[in-house]
Image (cartoon, rainbow, N blue to C red; front, side, top):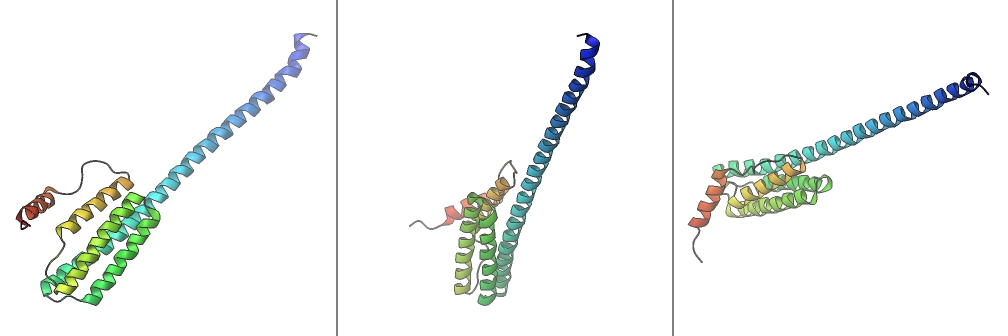
Length: 176
């Protein structure tokens, strides 16, 4: 058996094997890249869904804060309007619970409960105040949890003025 007779059989077979192997490697790389793109797209869609829920919740909370501020300036609480707006906040909070982490959902729940409590007190007392220090603290806690949920990092958003105001209010409270 000579090299010429063996090479005419082996070389085409080696070409088929190399071609098949390169096709398989190419398909593997394409599939791997596609899987990465799909995973990245799913992650972006989840982030967008969470972001939309967070924005909806903050929008509902802002409407109740704004309404209470307006009614306080007028001196006449509209119980029905406040109840309607609080219903929207509770609904937005439930959406947060469906699409966000437990930490964000708990922060939204705490903030919503405080807004609800403050709104009930606002309605009973006939107006009087805007947002309480506790509501601002819980809103800041929610925003920090939401920032973490969306992948942001860095220092906290709660401004020094709020922290100083909170500290000053605590100093001014009567001793019991």
